[in-house]
Image 1 (cartoon, helix red, strand yellow):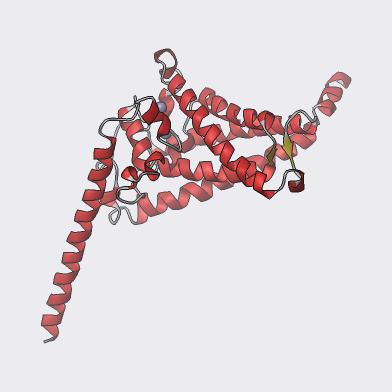
Image 2 (cartoon, rainbow, N blue to C red):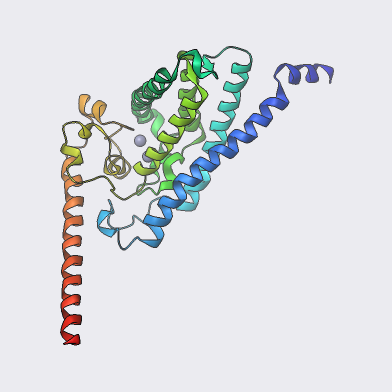
Length: 288
Ligand SMILES: [Zn+2]
Ligand SMILES: [Zn+2]
């Protein structure tokens, strides 16, 4: 018993538990605040209005249920929290490069560190994702994420627990690799959850020709990752398309699919404008 008490004191158990509870609450709030509004706007209240932007026009009935996507994402958030708490313990013991005083490296470095994390995360994610698609791994781990063949925003973290653990290990690398302020980590966290939710939105919200712009073509719009869920072996990138372009893993019909969605959007807008014009003319003739 005394040994156990000693161990708990050494691991600063109470402090770590307090931190873990708050971390879990914040993770849940970020996930909830970023998924629920997107879901309500696109999947519930205005789904008819946004129908032309639907990447897979007909709901794939074999796709994992939204309820199960939420359950899987909750388990992943819990696993992320455990890893966060372990990183916090390492920080308390002075093993990490995390810092809390902005003056130590200044604001420009803090902003720059967020960008470094984004680019590093993108690259690590790409190679981890390719690894997850290895035939010997795919069926046991990554297939859970691909059960959402037509993902909803709640599929953003719908992973097998082992995959959640691998994703969280990327955080560990940042904490030990380069000086990172806690604010930079939280800023990156909000950015990555937002982009992840948009990637799983099921609706294309990026503008026409985004995929053909000299610079923006390197950013993944929603269609890019949605095609990964629908067709599986291709479009592995997270934030950017450059590694898919470099390793020729981008689907050949990616641009065509993106353009077709915007053709549909333009068509539906012109139909609705014609409808409004005819209605206005009819109403005007009744008044006469
Ligand atoms: Zn995949
Ligand atoms: Zn996905």
